[in-house]
Image 1: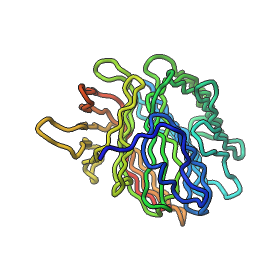
Image 2: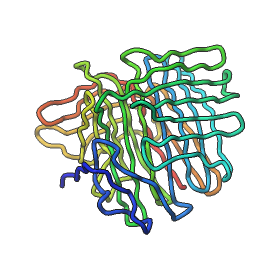
Image 3: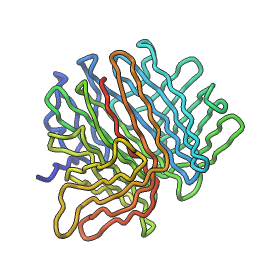
Length: 341
């Protein structure tokens, strides 16, 4: 059954804090007011910005899980495959400012460390100060500037009336700015610099496992392509988070996507394919060849997380009505995460 497309602004929840049934669907623009009232303890909010250039991958993220806050920055330089990261697990009193709309400010600060995500002038300024970052104090002044009318994948996932999640996936946003780490300076400039936003607001189940791939860049024809595919956490619902942006136009993929990989050796190729195989092929048929594996295990009593995230090059095809997107070696982030939170 086709996923319902929403075209007018809507609220994620009703006055009783339960899922608004009219919010179930997807939209090309972030039309959702996902401001969350209770129940305290189950609400999850995050803004996760990633930046990619031919030289590096950089992430700045703020997460509020009600009973715990996490802020982190990660940097992977591609020439030497050197990964560095800084992470804070915050006390309850250090709640970041995070609204329910994509265009709300996000502001976090704690003992000299700060992350600010400020929508301004049709784009977003991402400002980071992180003293004590490995290799020297980190300072970033970055900007994600969407092209006029650029679309995205915005989806409400309904597990139940009490458990639900809204996400806005915004890959392939042109990016610019400067990132400094100690005496090193990285300049984001040019046609191959892109940012991606993973915006999330929801009331989650305690135990979840998922796969995810995100990539931004250019396809074989030189078009700007943003890819977002996931599996696991949307199972059993009428919605997926799957879609591709081509030159600013969103194409929703409603079929289920499977991730096939060797859990004993995550550096072997991953296959990502849709479940709609026919004589004409599949909607999604991709292979990711990893070149870096980052692992993070967190055990903080009520929160436990096991993350295996690979960076790799994705090749293959995505069939769209009347055409196909051919991808040849685009750098992608691909992950398996198990979370109890």
